[in-house]
Length: 208
Image 1 (cartoon, one colour):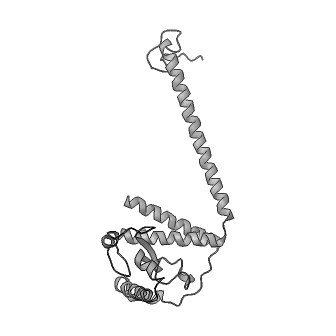
Image 2 (image 1 turned 135 degrees about the vertical axis):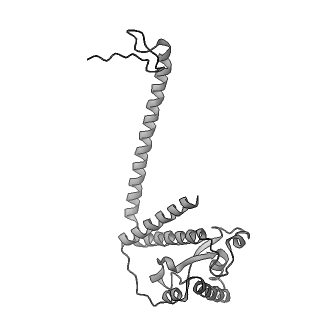
Image 3 (image 1 turned 90 degrees about the vertical axis):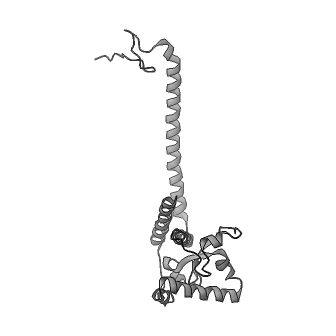
């Protein structure tokens, strides 16, 4: 059965017997078809590029060492806890200044806030990936405590006292340990990193 076109493919108006397109529509129809083809080719190119980026990311990921993935997991958990505490309207766990008070001061490289560790990552590696060991801390408290011995003692003491007041002494006692050593394999570290990256992205969407 032969198909007989009754409508112009460009303007959609009715055709005369024997016509396949209106003469005045030939050029704009051809231009529209060329533009459509260009869009389709661009779409295919973007899809191919996306696949290539994913493959490149996969290959790079396969080459990462355990220490690199461990570092990425630490950053992911820390970023989530910082954002989670900000979303709750919390202030600095050490000096108790509110978000408004901290952010009214001079801007610091990296922003106003850190995810401060109650027990340091270096001295207590078994708690480095423990979310409950990370709390919102202003840059002044987190950075300054590592430079000056007296300030470090004051910041740590107020961190512990305020954490006990806000979250309870039971949590502080648990964090103070002792804790068994943790031995994460690559799959566990990758899963933790991806989990907390996803949680952070979801929280950012909720706050947008």
